[in-house]
Length: 337
Image (cartoon, rainbow, N blue to C red; front, top):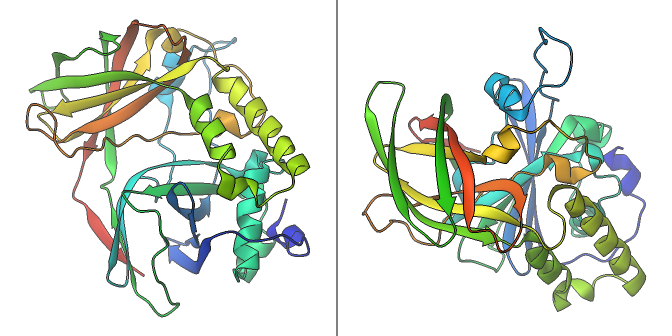
């Protein structure tokens, strides 16, 4: 699919702010499409996408997820983990975000509707992007914290992006049992041989179906589409969601503190011991990022969040998991556009 295919399709636009700023860095092109407002204020950015290389296998047959994760190279998603966007004098703190390839978005009506809204609001697709195949692009959507109204913007306004530091990946593979509603502390030895003390403040179940249904039942959103189109959108979203988290199931949210500035990544042992399943649709490439509402935890350390995207039943209490790896952070840096 190409952006030029969308230009002749009429549609009513919603509350959007067009930015339309292309960024060139290290011979790669990125494009800040703009912002949309509704239940949340979100920023939408297009980035290059390449399928991660699969390392050659020494033995025939499928590999478990654990082995694939050990050998996995980090994907290059430049803006997913940025911490702040500044438009002129307006600072926008980023609460979290998600990203995924546009490869499976030809039937994703919410994504297409967003691009059409932007076009009707005046977004001009740059020439270099018009004929770019969607297989080579990914859409990053960032959620702005504590704000729902669109900021003011003009094309000559400077933009400053605060990037969270590049991360170095370190394997741990420490077994740990998580308990919903309970806190606990543990420690592990990092890559320097030092003991790192961690405190899990909260383990909760996230009903992604409830969140999706709430978004699709928003009166502001409903009035923008016909009942027939709304039903079509709902069916597509639910079908995609069913692949990764069947209705009635939940994901696992973790809020934690750590006495080192590390980003922890947990997986369920069930997932690590499983074999990959083939999926169709954008759900297979969805990434979730969680940021707690509070800055500090009960131990006075920075409070961070992560999500285990393994579907569990809503009556789950104990989750056999692993601190599989952590990311070592480096200095934050600013990008002036």
